[in-house]
Amino acid sequence: MIADRIKLARRKAGFSLRDLSDAMQNRVTAQAIGKYERGEDVPSSGVLIVLSKALGVSLAYLLDTQGLQLAGVEFRTKANTSARDRALVETEVLEWIERYLQVEMVLELDSAEWQCPLSKRQKLRDVNDAEQLAAEVRRAWKLGIDPIPNMTELLEEKGLKVLIVFLPERVSGFTCLIRRPHASDLPIIVVNRERTLERRRLTLAHELAHRLGDCEGMSEKEAERAANLFAGAFLMPREHLLHGVGKHRQALGYRELIDLKRIYGVSGAALLMRLRQVGIISDPTLTYAFQTIARGWRTQEPEELETPDIRGKRERALRFDRLCYRTLAEGLISADKAVELLRLPLPEVELGLKGPQKANEDRCQ
Figure 1: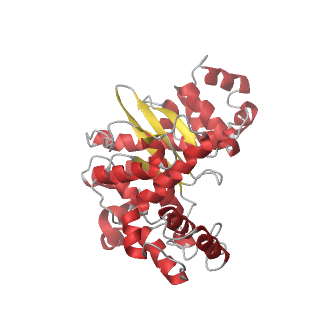
Figure 2 (figure 1 turned 90 degrees about the vertical axis):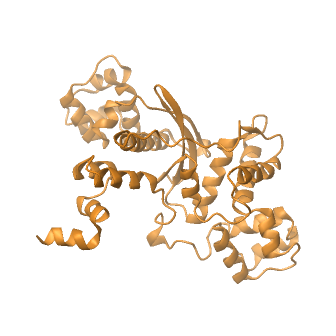
Figure 3 (figure 1 turned 180 degrees about the vertical axis):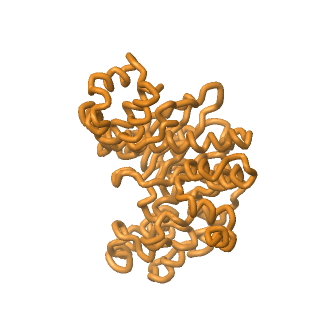
């Protein structure tokens, strides 16, 4: 509903009713905006345009033509997440999924169906059950025991929509559902682009655990531990580690650990914790590593897979972009519409469609 969208966008912007009225140069009063949000009145088309500009959202978002609703939003840092943070994130997700579904509709595609590897969510009675759950998911998806080259692409192939965006510092990621009229729910995982690639991959696996595991009966802390264990087991299978590192190690070298974290695409600290979980190293060896060669690894990632200047550019969620360029190449949408959908400047969209040589030729003419 328009009422809900206005309220959510206002919270995202951090405006009071009076602030929003001022941002609209008093086109309408704060009392009138309150009526819009309560559904007691509907803004005219002219007021809607001014509202969208003041709130920094699209007109399509405010109109809510697809009747989409966000459900089951599960932030992992509830105690530290402000109402404005939640509104900002929820608005971002709704705007993005509406653009995504527009493209699928143009191509007459049913939205990629979530290929759940289990017949139903698996009940986890103990934190350690997460290890078995990770093994079952790998078997169902026929992944073997090898490292996963691209976690984002894997989940997109299985029908999960992945959104990698700038989120508030306190939010690493979350999972949610998009409810659609007369259609199945769409599961979505949202990840903070500001995190390192190592952290993003772990977050994706962590959120997958929350999608597949039923932790009812566990405390929130236990549920988080189970999801962390699943993430480690899914990205670093026990058998592969034992084969590559050895069954029992008394000491580890810096270069070996860096090479291993690159093989599995995980953080150095997560790798060491997984080596302890599998039993390859003992508690004293783990402690010694964090005191010596891995000092500071819990807060500062050693030799990141992405340098800070290109953060967020590897293992991107590419399906939406591919579909946009497909519709553009087939003449189903205009270049201006592609700009709106992709949120890229026109020269960049033309570059993505024609390639650098043709795009340069066209600009020189």
